[in-house]
Amino acid sequence: MTEQGILGALQTRPAECDRHGEYESVMLNLDGQRWTGCPDCSAETIEQHQAERDACQADELRRMRGQAMFEASGVPRRMQGATLKGYVSDSDEQAAAHRQVCEYAKGLTEHLETGDGLVLMGNMGTGKTHLAVGLIRYVTRTLAVQAQYVTAPALFSRVRASYSGNGETEAQILDELVAAPLLVIDEIGVGKGSDNELNLTYSLLGQRYDACRPTVIITNLMSDDLRSWLGERVVDRLRETSPVVLFNWESYRGRS
Image 1 (spheres, rainbow, N blue to C red):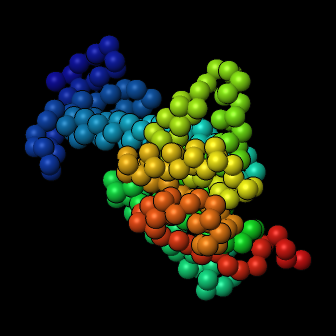
Image 2 (image 1 turned 180 degrees about the vertical axis):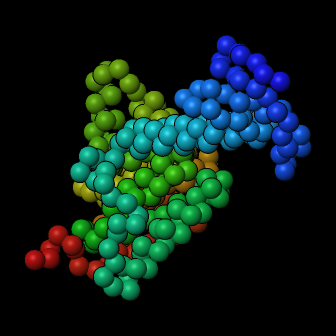
């Protein structure tokens, strides 16, 4: 049978597909003559390509959402390139600390249910903040879980500013930080710690403890000094929920 179709079809003939059986093949005269293949196979190919495009778009949306979460986490610009993978371990102690934080990251889904956190404790310049930021990057960009980074001095300054009527209240600040699925508090123990600062810290950690929301604390204080700064009640709760990761080697910044 010969036809002259508006799309350049010249003729048809019976054909058979190994998967879908018999079909009618059409000769097309579009950029040269060719016989059409199985329409069912063509439909499956189109569906597969569409699914791949949809998956790529979904992956890109997840990547963009994760990046937005990371950028909104409050991590300082200077530290935003830190990753868990990029942490350099030159000793067994460093490797152990690196491993502990990585294992914590892998188990984060469970920690979000139990409220278990970490205490990164030890000398200045030993990579505590690097690993904490790497954890935040993993949490936001890989798991699409919101996280918040704050230093204790910045938190105390923000709360003091709220007393002058700058548009937010201490309660609102606490509510924001209590609601964060994962909270990292850096520089715990910097300064003497006024009664108001200690009460604020106790309230924040206590509310997060009650809500089973994990908190990662970073401090240069060792156990006895941290207990003196935070108070026995706070340390007792940390002891229950937050294993200590010890950073007791020489500062990277002190190396020539």
